[in-house]
Image 1: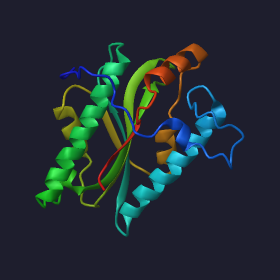
Image 2: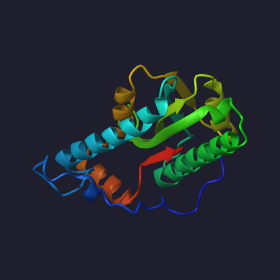
Image 3: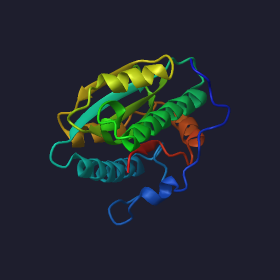
Length: 202
């Protein structure tokens, strides 16, 4: 694994309780990790705003991609989640540098993207990884995303064309949670105030 951060995940300025619409849902506790009603409200709102933001970048000729981005996991999911976000931020910075220099290919072809933290894998065990939805120019070679991620350190990347922007955005944001309530409480405590949907691009 590459260099690990020494601090906890960064805090978001907006608390999860502010994401819940009182007019549409009966519950307003804002606990999206233990309360299924508030979780569905948060998913719906984040999906709408993210899809709208990304679709604005598609314009006439944009292309949408769905990516899974991983690093080796050893059981310290807080540190591993921080490392995932560090790499996502680095990907965004390299993209911005290339666009500023007028490089029309590679990461410079990315218009906008969201990276969303998933903590649970298919087997239901803790396995931090990111799901990304990326909108790019049609000239991009998806290999540039894979190569950039792997230059940051060990990890697996899968990048595919998205058939439906709305479907991949919702899938990314509605990542599974642990089945056990105690595990959900632990996740809620550790991610309190943490922004799990991160953007690249403007």
